[in-house]
Structures are given as structure tokens and as C-alpha cells.
Image (tube, rainbow, N blue to C red; front, side, top):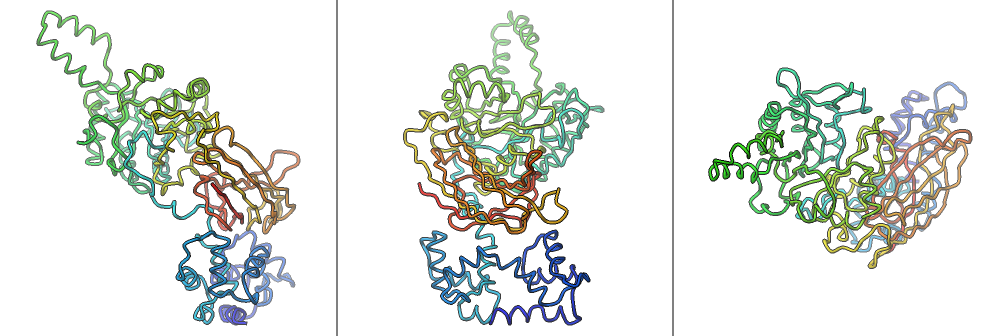
Length: 600
């Protein structure tokens, strides 16, 4: 009764003038804190407008409200814990949180605080009870998101050396379309940094009037001033994450314009530019923590011993001066000293082979390997590759033939411990979904500590084999229902023939895909109640991707939305899976309602 009285008291004012139209209906739903999709409300309004006058009565509004809020699957849960099917007492809420949400350290204050926060009916709240309205608000809150809130903050140890982390990295960051004729845009850098990207690529070329430019050389892509790019990076570098940004320079400038690059970097970035080794890190890579709010330059470097060596030999053996200088001229050191001096812990060094690296590579030298070569190495010498990555930073970049800016699946290179797997951030699709999903972890900081078996210099791990000390996870996901899913573009109303696909990405033995049956002509509130079980051998590397599609019998299924996250970041119990469009926009309130359970 309290619920009904409360409901009428909230909307009485709005119906003083009689019936209300669609716009006022939407405003009134907002007043009730009801999240809604405009397209769904439009058609539900139409269905409830019995006289077809474009206006509805209180009763018709109540019917709309109930169709959105009173979902059958939530009523079932509420009734299972309510003694009278009208309210939940504190102890009922306690039972629900303990049994369904696996909250083990349940203090009295949790249920009490939940009622205080979500119960809209004042008298019920004062009695420390909860109505169905309060319960549904609780279930629709961020506390029930699939991604467990404990991972929203930086929680990992950030004191390991840089090579111990997966680092969010982008390729040709300045491009926002294809690789040949598309525009270059500052937005490419700004949006990548806002997404938590920590390694940006900058293609530098000689420009007119001694002003270096950024573009994809030998193509028709437009040009940006290097100075403008660095100004944007300086502005956006630490908005999302405090941890270091690496500027990977693809340097094609003449020595004179390289000096301009160095001057711009120093002038614009000031103290944020790392220009010297840190005191405690002269023989090992520093940690993300030690490099907080710092920007590092990745480029070729003239080794100081080469420069010192020249001076020494000039003094000691003047007779050999001409010979030494001619050798240096033949070698043609193309890196300007001023720029070289700014390369501290991220020297770009050509990768030869694992044996050479083992014997000669310095801790501050990093390798860039094109995806095809990296794939071949990972197939033939996976264990050597993993051992290499326990000591040195490896950057993987897309093959040149990806002129459309398409991406490879980054998972195969994370499986072998490659730190910087660089993708075209401007290109939506499964690879970027996986990238965005992986780097939700650790507070979206752009740095994720690699599992122990990818950091241990004596590791025996191979992604093709089941590890000896494997602690597999048995994961059960019940796909219960869909909430206001996007309608099909082929529907003349708000309908779609919907299905859900669950994909596991990880080591090869863990990769699997399962799907629900198709629910015909219902994007508003489809119900599946289908349960799927997965046994995952290497949970530390596993990602779960939920994809919602509309079935298309003639062509391929239509993508409606997706969500990807690391397996070990999933909360247990009843959870809401938010959905994102192909281009990464939040489709709220569109979501899936699921039940998750796993043991390890």
C-alpha cells in the first residue's frame, strides 16, 4: 500500500492538467529515477495510448512504468526473499547478499546502508525495510555491474620494473581513419590518452620553415605540426592515469630538425619529460610508481661510450684520427645528439634474434617487431620469446599491408608476455574490444602487472601447454534476460531477433564460444534463462566477451552491442552486463542480466 501511495504522490502534480504526452512521460520516468531507452518508451507509449491521441492517463502511465520497472525476473528474486511479497526486512536483504552475492564479511551496516541509499519510500526506509522499487533501484545500480568495483582503483603492486607490465599502446596514434589518405588529427592522441593509453606513436618528418610535422610518410594523409601534437599530449597525458607515458618516435627527420624535436620536447613538456636516469635505477628499469607523471622518449640513441670512445682515441692515437673519422662517416650516425640525450630507459633497438638479445641487449633497450614476424617467433620459439620478455620491453605493431587500419588479435602476444601490443585505436571491432576490456583492470591506469609465470626469468610457461601448477577456474554464467536492447536497424519498430554469444579469449586451450537460442521480435525484455559452464586453465590471461546480435537469416547477424572484461575482474551472483556499441559508446540502459559463479 505504501508503494502505491508513494507512486501516486510523485506523479499527482504532473496529471493536474489531465493527460500527458510522450515528452512529459519521459520527464516523469526521470522523476522516478527510471532509466529508459527513448526508442523503447516511444513504442510502449504508443501501445498504451488506447485512444491514439498522443496523450495518456495516469493508469496508462502506470502501465508503462510497470512494464519497465516490474521485470518478471526481478520479481521472482524479490519474492524468493520477501516474507510477504511486499517488502524486504533487513535480515531478508542480508540473506540475499550472503547467498546470492557471496558477500561473506557481511556487517549489519551493509543492509542498513543499502536501504538508506536506495529505498524511495520514506516510511518504509524509516522502518528499515525495502520495497520492490528500492530493490530494483539497488539491482540497477553500479554495485551490480559485472565488473567488480574493487578493480576500479589501482590495486596492483606498481613497484616492479616497467617490463613486468602489460602497457596500453597505440599504433599511428595520429590517424583517425585509414593509413593512406585519411586525416591526421590531434583528437587521435587526446582520445587515446583519455582511454588510458600509455604508449603513443609519433611519425616525425621534416616540415617547411624548420617545423617538423607528423603524418604517415609517403602517403596522402594530412600533416600535423609536431609542436601541436606535443602540446596536446602534455595537456591530456595524466587525465586518466598518473603513470608514465612513452612517446615512440618513428623518426624520419634530418639531424637539424631532430634538434628542433628535442627543443620542442624540452620546452613544452618541461619537468614532465624524463631527461636523466633516476638515482636508484642506473642498472635496471624503473617502476611505473617511480616514473609517475613522467613522459619518456623512445627513439634510437647514440651510446655515450661511442662518443667517449671517439674522444679518447683522438687524444691517444692522433695518427689514427683520419681512419676513425672515416669509419664514423661511413656509419653515418643519423641521430642528433640533442634528441639522443632525451632517450633514457626506452632506446629503440633492432631485434636480431633471441640469442643475440640474451648476450648483448641492455636493460634499457626495447624492440619493435612487426606482427607477422612476432607471430612466427611465437609459434616456433614461444618459450624463448617469453624469457626475452621477462627482461626486455617488446612492442608489437600491425603489418604494413593493413592499409585500412584493421587490427590483429592482441591476445596471442599478451599470452607470451609482450608488453606493448600496439593497435589502431581508431578502428572499432573485436581487437579493440579486447584491448579496452583488458585495460579496465587496475583502475584503467594503462599498466597491468603480468602474471608471475610471465615475469619469472626461469619460467617454464608455454601458452600451448597446460601449466604444471595450473589453478583452473570453473566458470558458470546463466544468461537470464536482456534489458532494453538496441532494436535491429531492419525493424520498423523496437524489435530484434536477439541472441547472446559468450566468447573466452586467452591461451589457445581456453578459447571457446557459446551462444543462446534466438528470442524472436523482442529487444525490450527477452528472457533466455540459459546456463553455460567453462573450464579455464589459465584464468590470469582470460577475457570474457559478451556479444548481443540480431539474427539475420540471409546475411551475417547484426551486431547490437558487446562488453569485454578480464575473467578475474568479474563479480559473483546476479550482475548487470553493460553494453557498448561497435564504436565504444555506452548504450545504457541496454544491458544483460546474468548470474555468475566460479570457483578456483
